[in-house]
Length: 86
Image (cartoon, one colour):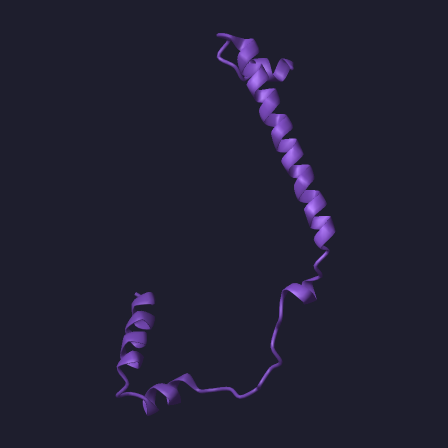
């Protein structure tokens, strides 16, 4: 409790200390609840995330842009790509 007193402005310190103790108890209960919920779920990394198999079909970005040069979305994309380097 002494450390809580040092955090008060010394006016009506008992009320301020009470508020800090109450806040601490609420946070402690919330943390305990989170631990209980996490333990009950027990999701493994594999269940939560999915990484697809590699398709190993590399694509040359330069060739793709050259083949689709008339596509307006390519021009907009290149504009953003080039502006990131400046």
